[in-house]
Image (cartoon, rainbow, N blue to C red; front, side):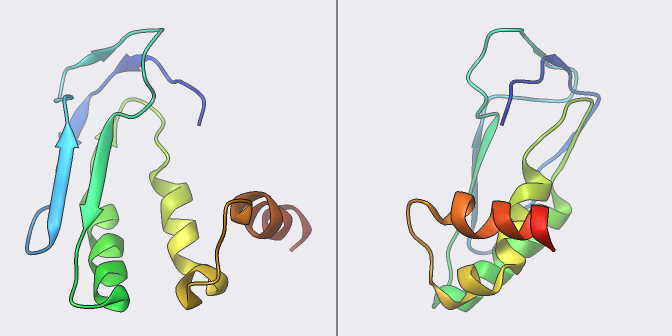
Length: 105
């Protein structure tokens, strides 16, 4: 989650039913050294939790931001986590579940 200044060389937003994106960036945008690391906010909606997760997975696969590092791979990892899928997450979820799995598997 560390800032990654640079120029966005390629940019493509996902779309479709239940997908919303809030962003200010575009292809060619130069990210300054000091900035809020939230480049884009991706929100999905579904009739139930599973449908929203399926839409989020698809949207993250379609999302293209090249030229700078993003947290897209991290979010894809979270969506595959069995505890997250069951709805068993809490404020220290990343530290207690995801980080332990990443380092001890």
